[in-house]
Amino acid sequence: MKTALITGITGQDGSYLAEFLLKKKYHVFGLERRTSKRNRESIEHLIDKVELLSGDLLDAESITRALKQSKPDEVYNLASQSFIPDSWRQPVYTGEATGLGVTRMLEAVREFDPNIKFYQASTSEMFGKVRATPQNEGTPFHPRSPYGVAKLYGHWITINYRESYGMFAVSGILFNHESPRRGLEFVTRKITHTAAKIKLGLAKELRLGNTSAERDWGFAGDYVEAMWLMLQQEKPQDYVIASGETHSVEDFVQATFKYLKLDPKKYVKIDKKFFRPAETDYLRGDAGKARRELGWKPKVGFEKLVQMMVDADLAALSSSKISK
Ligand code: NAP
Ligand code: GDD
Image (cartoon, rainbow, N blue to C red; front, side, top):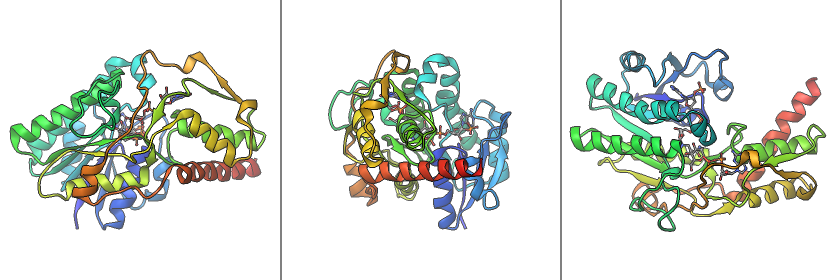
């Protein structure tokens, strides 16, 4: 039986990865922050199946303690301050958690057991103001947010530990991936959740920022498999994981409202408050290397993703409406 330690287990990807690894018969540990309000919604159904350890990427000792307690074969570093607008509001904190946090993880792994395999959650946001399309492992980076800059540091320090110490440390450069467990502040879930509320008479409008922005969206459940596959290879390498399709935020709005048989013109308002100081306008990934070498490809397409998220929001909101 293999053992894995997942940082960020309470997040969207952490919950899907924990489910995936449990199905593969892993012993799963998760690093969880001690916060004033426990944030376990996404992993409530897994609480008896995983072991939660208290820790924070800002606290090196807590990471070392978690490694000693779990003795993992594989570490998946998914924890980060991941909401891009907050990275302008808290740039130094974002650098600490999303950037330096990776070094704290790598250093703790190196000192405890350098044979542990390490996965770093890198991101398409590192491509930012894109220099080529589609973006692949060789495309130059130009991050457009303090978050993107911090992630780029995390990306390069992972490569550096691989090259300096021969560690099995890899970065998955994942393009946007969504699900019914996506945080409500991210645009896809904000759209499906608010539109479902409008449908049920619980909201009157949907306020959005830049709806021209274009993203390469996939389903989180498909993407966690790629993380695992990267750690099962003979050689440590970085991979782009993407759907290869681009849609605008406006397309996402249209697909959501069409599915709900609502007219978006009646409800969607543009609000300057949600525009960013600098924007990543367009992303489209080329996951050819992952397809060839990992045998990975996405299963859930754009329309199905929208419908899955809308259905889940409608069901959850309807049942909470009934219980009120
Ligand atoms: P998410 O839902 O925002 O989850 C982030 C997780 O990190 C949460 O469990 C959070 O814990 C934890 N965390 C935050 N700061 C921490 C700290 N200082 N110490 C320990 N844990 C901390 O993110 P996600 O969508 O699952 O994404 C997973 C990772 O992939 C992130 O690193 C993200 O930046 C990256 N990524 C995501 C995407 C995407 O499209 N989803 C694409 C590329 C890369 P709390 O519950 O305590 O807040
Ligand atoms: N959040 C949000 N809210 N975004 C909006 C809104 C709004 O009201 N209106 C328009 N947008 C636009 C943003 O300006 C951005 O261009 C796009 O919608 C997507 O925003 P998010 O869903 O917040 O995702 P993101 O692309 O900024 O970041 C996500 O994907 C990255 C991978 O490229 C996060 O998951 C990051 O952690 C991840 O690395």
